[in-house]
Length: 245
Image 1 (spheres, one colour):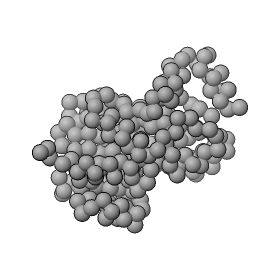
Image 2: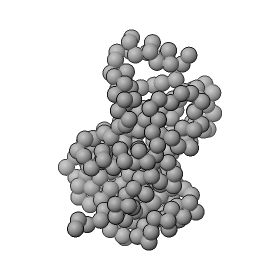
Image 3: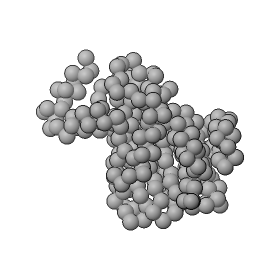
Image 4: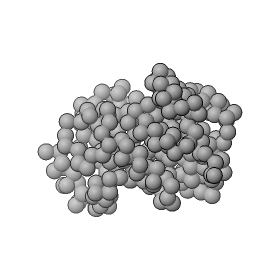
C-alpha cells in the first residue's frame, strides 16, 4: 500500500480549500490546515478526523508563516504545499480604496512570495508546491482591478519559481475560473461557466497528479481567455473595452 501523503493546505477553511481538504482526507492524506480563523480551522480538522492538524497563520505576516514552518519542520517532510489564501474586492480601479488595495497586494502577492521562500525547505525531494493564480490574471479585464493585477503577479512568480527550482521541486500553477464561493458571490456581473468548490477540488487534484505545469478550469472559459490574452493589443483591447459596457 502506498504511503499516505502529507499535504499543507493554506486557505483551508472555505471554498476551494475546504473542498480540497475534504477530498484529500477522503483519499487518506494527512493534512495540515492553515488559515487565519483558528476556530473554524479546528472545527474542520476535528470533523475530518484525528490525523489532521489545524495550524492558524496569516500569510501577510512573515513571522506568522515562519512560526508555522518551524512547527511543520518537526512533523515530517511534506509531499505537497497548496497555497490558496487570497482576498478580493470587486469594482473599478478608480473606486477602490487605497488601503484596501495595498492589503490585497500584501495578502495575494506578497503572501505568495513568502510561501515561495518558506515552503520549499519543508518539502521532500521532488515534492510539490502549488500557487494559486486565476484566469483573472491572464489579461486586464473590467472590474478586475488590483485583484487581477496580483494574480498576474502570482502567475509570473510561479513561472520564475518553476525554472529556479527545476529538478528539486515540482512547482505548479492553479488558475481557476469562476468558482461559487463567498468571494465570487460579491460580484454583480454575469459569471460564465461557474463551477462548485467540489468540482474545482476534483479538477485541481486530477491536474496536480498529472505532469502539466498549469491546472486551469473550466476549459470552456480558460481557453477563451488564453486566446484573448494571446491577441495583439489592437485586437484584444477593443474586446475587453466592450466587456465594460
